Amino acid sequence: MQISSRFTLAIHIFACIDTFGSEYKVTSDFLAGSTNVNPVIIRKILGQLKGAGLIKVARGTGGTTVAKPLDEITFLDIYNAVECVENGELFHFHENPSTNCPVGRNIHHILDDKLIRVQSALEKELASITLADIKRDTEKYLA
Amino acid sequence: MQISSRFTLAIHIFACIDTFGSEYKVTSDFLAGSTNVNPVIIRKILGQLKGAGLIKVARGTGGTTVAKPLDEITFLDIYNAVECVENGELFHFHENPSTNCPVGRNIHHILDDKLIRVQSALEKELASITLADIKRDTEKYLA
DNA sequence: CTAGTTGTAATGTCAATGATTACAATTGTG
DNA sequence: CACAATTGTAATCATTGACATTACAACTAG
Figure 1 (cartoon, rainbow over the protein chains, first blue to last red):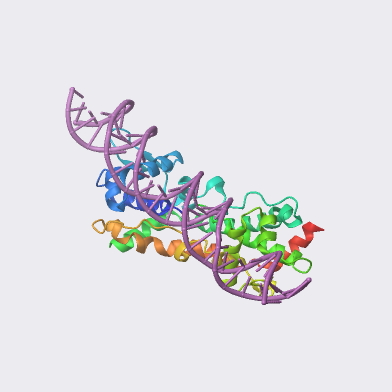
Figure 2 (cartoon, chains in turn yellow, green, blue, brown):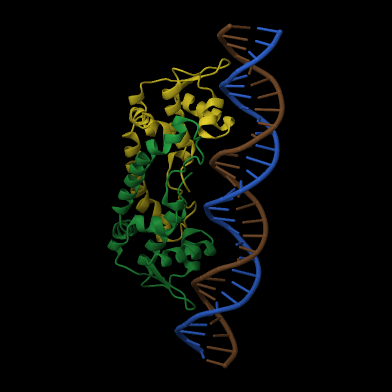
């Protein structure tokens, strides 16, 4: 299965806040228009990003702002915030390998460290990209 | 979403073929017993691995063998064989960003190269692990 | 107070996963 | 040759997550 579009949506949201935040009030309806995604879905993602301390959302009056310097928010922070994988485990392991079979009994010992290596490689690359990179390239393409 | 358990199942299957292949006939029922997964699911995975040229399956008589030297089969080969992600794209991009919004119009330009970087990091790590590593560690834990 | 928003619950649709039953096709062996 | 074991595959089913949508209570600036 693919990683949920919540991830690309969240980055799109940050690009909008940064680009339009000084000029417009960035509401869930505004973001729904730019992403073409239902405003309730947007509000759920905003709630997750807020919960992770990445943005501030104004209750009642409306509008969203970024809570930290852009170069301190990595793709990994966003990826974790929007819960792309359950329990933080990228790979879904088959649940009940047989304890009667020597291989089944040891498959976790054999495999777990390798799965972690792969997952760590993914997360390391996610951590190497920040919203400052997004800001730079957004300005480049909008010019 | 997590990556399908077909991936860990496939590796479990290879470990069984290597460990028991010389002594027993490794059938889908045998593998279903070791993995605790339905034999029809096993047969589907075997079909995908066979289609990728990684194993040979004996029709009628039954039994499975590995088609290549173990150090020539990487985790990436297996990952691709069992179709863990659609179109080979790890990230699901929201489908219709607005063309009326400057950010929506450019979000793919801004983001695609970064998503590819992350996906490549994952695939590179997958490619660095082979079934020879699994064989070595299986023997270690079964001893 | 009112208008515009957010937060959230409740439903609905759709797709993928995995289990399960059933059965035709295949093939070595008695 | 006929049989028994096995593969390949179709057809269902239950469960789960994603995303859309409607509805509405709670909140806040003006």
